[in-house]
Amino acid sequence: MSEELVQRDGVLFDARWRNWLIAQLLDGRHPAELTQVMIRRGFTPAFAERTVTGIAGSEVLEGCMAALRGPAKLAELMSLLGTLFTRSGFTLERRRLSAESFFRDYFFANRPVVLTGLTDDWPALRLWGPDYFRSRFGSVKVEVTHRRDADKRYERNFTSHRATVDFAEYVSMVERPGAGNDTYLVARNRVLELPGLRELNDDFSCIEGFLDPRTADVPYVRLWFGPEGTLTPLHCDNRNLLFAQVTGRKQVKLIAPYFLAKLYNDEACYSSVALEAIDLDRFPAMRDVPVLETVMDPGECLFIPLGWWHWVRSLDISTSLTFTNLLHDQPPLLWNQVMA
View 1 (cartoon, helix red, strand yellow):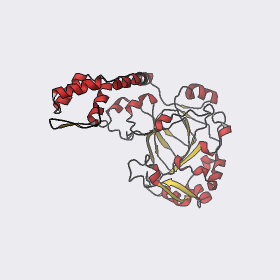
View 2 (cartoon, rainbow, N blue to C red):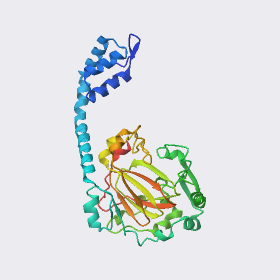
View 3 (cartoon, rainbow, N blue to C red):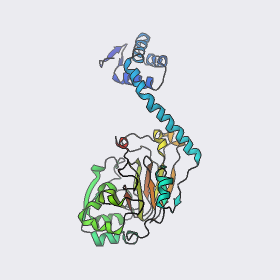
View 4 (cartoon, rainbow, N blue to C red):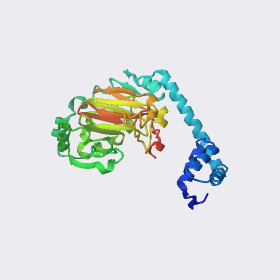
């Protein structure tokens, strides 16, 4: 078909109609059914039949169908694995594990787990909080995300919400009653790389046996600090993560990668589903998606495997760290397509 518009009986056949027909044929709908749709929309029977037949018999469509056979098989396999996961009754466990058991039973199995006892010796657990940050680092300029409440897509529009303030000023924002989700110091603000905050790295350590000490420098660890009520919407990172809760509590929800096709992943690594209040009329496929949930207490770590979707809400004024230098993930496995 050419790109030119074709007029028939006052009805316009354009690129949108052509693309719709191609998508429907690739989805397996019969040409006769599509012909009838066009007729009902005002095209003459002869034009509708000739157009649908021409596209259905084209070499381009045949090539597209051949190219999609592999992805279609993979999608069906993922769906079956999702059903198997649901039947398994898998739950998010809280375990005190050796490094060997963790890597064998969870890391290489791509299963999440809450780990206890790994950070008991961290000074950060007793030091970090508003008073400590204000007294030790109050004059340091830090970048935060600001005015998030005015934008439903605040995570996607991260760059437009950046603001630079004194750390002491930000601490006052965090302590303000009802501060909620409007202002947050998140991992992407990369504040641990600031010379003025380097001392914070002395308050925690590379977890022996779990993290790779050869790569335990600043780019592999990120800081989160914010008030009660901050919300990170449903998304997926492109790598394995070890999430360490330092102070305060966070509620975390997780969804296995097998359910990607039902998560309304409309842009990059983001889902349109508000997991805090799922609109099943708008997102009916979510009805059958199992959601794992836990509350992270200070001193606990959560392994978030590659491909697992997650949602996080702060229940208190909270500080957290995320690490990407897991011992058996060097060089790191990266799911680059999730960012596309």
